[in-house]
Length: 155
Length: 83
Image (tube, rainbow over all chains, first blue to last red; front, side, top):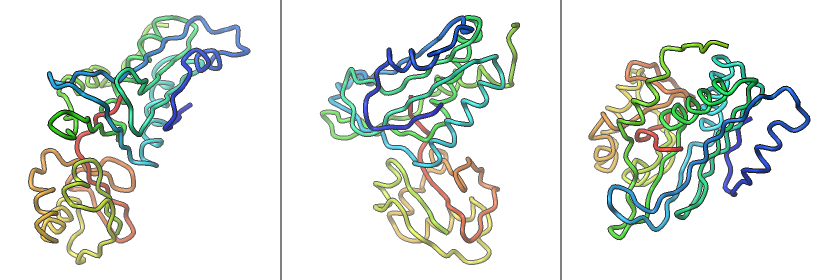
């Protein structure tokens, strides 16, 4: 499931809902992204996340479908916030459920790596020098590239 | 054709969205970027460095050779920084 929303989310409630009523899930992996108060040495007061409504949901659904195709997942969830966020606030939640931990952990990493380089979100930070658009990092491209071409884990 | 601008491209161009009717020979993303650059100094400044401009046609990433036509939704934005 994919959600793009202004409001915060309750991690415990979301993870509980992911596997509610099931007894065949072996493990849930999750990643929670938070706003940091430092960026490139400059102190950040807050940031605003802008996105491309329509394309965002489409790309997140594609990324999730790719994870479902590559790993034996029983459930998956991507929640990404937009709007103004302050240091310590949650930005994103990615969670995957599978009979075995390796598929859950790998697919969770895959989802956040691909999301960071493919989903149309942009961060603008409030700094002492004024608003600064965050620049994409080569290390994020490298992280995403690890997952291409498709590979399958042993089940 | 609808052109959307996001992040600092929106700031530089000064608008988030515009309806445009390029001449018929503007048939690719690359040609559209060239044509948009001629619309004024703000457009030219926003599109000066093509290496940091990404393009989506009808909400799918597209390269410079990708075709564009009347009725398309073309979005211009910097490399994404979500997550």
